[in-house]
Structure formats: structure tokens, C-alpha cells
Image (cartoon, rainbow, N blue to C red; front, side, top):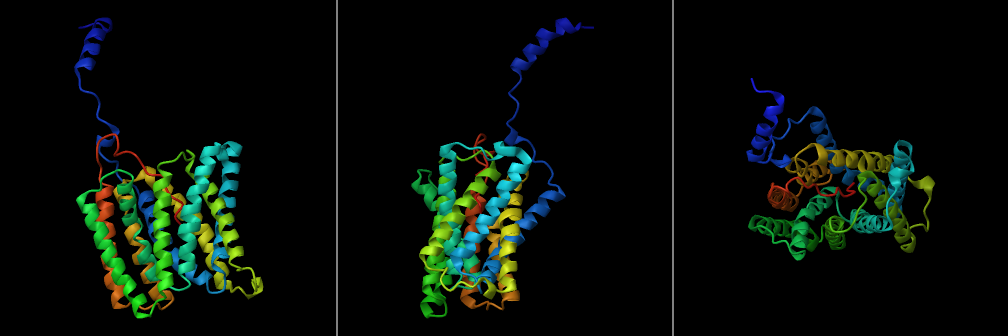
Length: 340
């Protein structure tokens, strides 16, 4: 029998000759538990339903002031949660990280979400959600400008998505939908994609919840300023706001801006990116169905056809762009944006 002392050199030699252990990305994916599917269901339904909630809130609320109330409230609640759970360290960031969070919040939630809210005063919620589904398509374009050559399938998805947007925009040309609303929403999708793209290039807080809190607070202040400049405060009567609009706003704060985003941030660490990314083309389907069921929004031929084309294009882009690549890059998770 070999003594432990004499076996050490042999063990060291065997370890030196053995291949390096495989990267974490090469290990078999762990079995997904019920919590993953529950969180994914929350993101599917809640984010898909926010378009309907926005539409209901806008029935008796001004657009940018309602968005300001939503994000200021959600940001303060999230910041308060971090203070209670982690103390001041939970919100500690550098000046550069704070500036980066403010920029991303401005692009995502003031430019992106704010223009969506304004656009929904002219465009049905279902059509809005289908137009917003173009965000991943813009991401491919921005990535190409950033120096990363897109795959042929990604380009095909972009072209397919643009074709779908053309079909969706056809009712506006015919006069049944305000063209201004379609233009505002398309600009919003570009700004949202730009904010998502920039967030990967600049220093962001390591604490995802802290970054989201600063993004929402920045957006809330900016939306408030935009609303005041637009004169939305003139003639505003809080007593005239309907109960269902208040309920819709509360739903957006608690579920759209807190619950769904928290579930999404957790999913990025607990589930494959290809699975998490399916929210990008499931949300529009949920939004169209809810708009049809609750608000009796019509399901026209151009809406169904254009929506199917957009969803197909987004599916193609998401499935290709989130496919695992080189070992060292496959495990990198994108920063979750404050999509709500």
C-alpha cells in the first residue's frame, strides 16, 4: 500500500497532466425549478399588461405627470427597501455610476417609456405593444454601429421586423390611427434600445436594485419637468381622476415597476438567457389579447398580420443573438434595464 506522503508527487503529476476543468458554461444546465417558471410567468403577464394599465391610467390622468408619479413612487419604495435591508451601503455608488444610472434612466424611462405613454393617447394599447416589440431589432442596428458585425440571421430578422412595422403603420396612413402616435412610439423604441445599449458600455452600479432605483428617480424627476413644461398641470383636478385610473397607476408602480422587474433581474441569474429573452415577443401577444378582452380594442387585419411579422422578426433576432457563443462570453449577463 502506498503511503499518503509518497502519493502526493503522483497526485501532483496527475493533476498537471490532466486537462483543465471545463468552464462553468460547459457544465450541464441545472434543472429549472418551479420558482423559475413562476417568475417567468410574472414577467410574461405583468409586463404584457402594463400597456393596458397605461391606457386606463391615461383615461383621466396626464401622460408625463402620471409617469412621473409612477417612477418617483417606485424609485422611493425601492430605495427605502434597500435602506432597510442593506443600510446606506445598499445605495452607495460612485459619481460616475450615479451619472451613468441617470443617463440610462433618462433614455429608458423618460425617452422610452415617457413617449410610449404619450403615444398611447393616440394609439391602442395592443398596437403599441406590437410596435414596442421592435426594440430588439434596434439593438441589432446599434450593435452594428458599435463595431460588432451582426449575423446574417439577425439582419434578416431586422428586415422582417421593419416589414412588420410597415404593415402595422398602414392604418395610420389610411387615417384610422394617428400617425403622430406611431412616430412617437417608434422613437420611444429607439431610445429604449439606445439606453439598453449604453448601459453595457458605461460604469453602472454593481447592485442591480440600486441602479434601478436611481434610474426610476431620475426618470420621475425628468418626466415631472417635461409634464410641467407641456402644461399638464393646468386644469389638473385630482378629484376628477377616476378610481380605475388610480388603481391602474398603483398597478404600474407595484407590479410593473417593482414586482416584474425584480422577477426579471432574478431570472437573469437563475435561468438561461434564451429562456428569459422570450419575454420580448410574448409581451405583445398578452397586450393585444388584454386590449381586445378588456377595452374591446379591435383586432384588425393589419394589426394581426403586422404583429405576426414583427413577432417573427423579433423571435429570429432574439434566438440568434442570445445563442451561446465563445466560452468566456456565453456566461455574461446583460444588465437588466428598468423595463416596466
